Image (cartoon, rainbow, N blue to C red; front, side, top):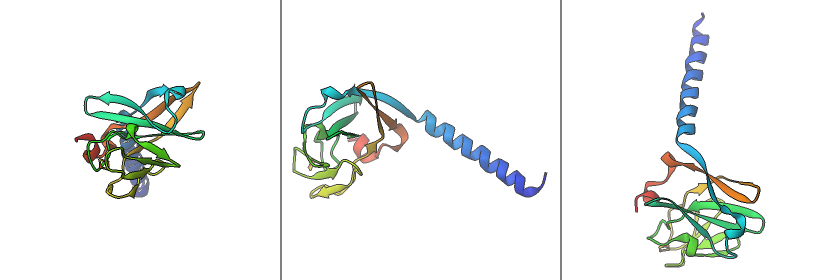
Length: 139
Ligand code: FES
């Protein structure tokens, strides 16, 4: 076997190992029935003692983000939706639900967004447990 093929095989094995690790660290979880999401507010799902996500609906689009605000201990599921922004109920900071980026002071750190899918009226989200931002997981 020539040397270049050996590198290709080693790279492929490393890539497969990385994909296996990512699959093991992620899982689709049921969030709620889409009718449970209130208009203009969020639906909170507690995943673990210190970890919750918030689901929102904007028109016919659904978003799932980390529930804790990156500025303080507020629950974003209790915030208010304006367009694609969620306004934190504590100090009025805002985030774009599509990107998680902060759009209004005092928030400066992004919230983690999660991929979503809907099956038969049920909202699911893909959680990467190893990618949850420490500042949102450990507060
Ligand atoms: Fe969210 Fe302060 S806790 S803006």
